[in-house]
Image (cartoon, rainbow, N blue to C red):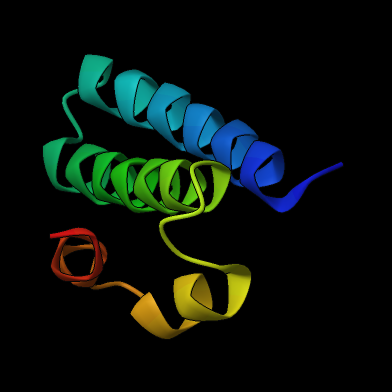
Length: 72
């Protein structure tokens, strides 16, 4: 399976976890998983559209704003 699809699947799972935690009123944990979901989705998008490569995705780490700096 391609890296961007793996990242997208993980992003979906993280989002589902965030929804479950939110429903249980575990808000700080829900925010954490939501943020993780966004990071992985952004990396997936970047790789899929060849804005960044896999190495750059790893270098971005937890700073998704670096993706936007590469893009613009």
